Length: 57
Image (cartoon, rainbow, N blue to C red; front, top):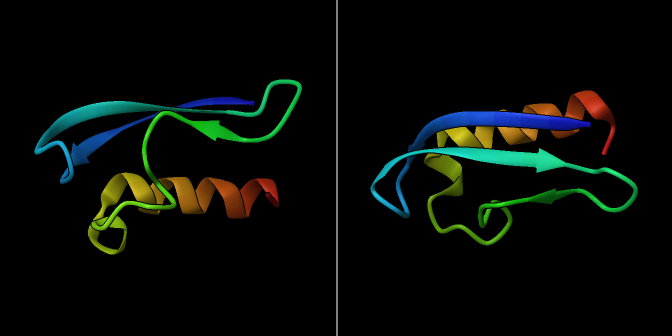
């Protein structure tokens, strides 16, 4: 699975595209989703969480 999620990143204070993938191994993403201090208010984090729930990861 490979997914691209776009939105506003509060940590970087700008728009960005985050890649989420688990090709032949563990799930990886190019943002600090699990450690981000803005995770609760982040639209990108919300989309990542929904994707993880949908995929059962």
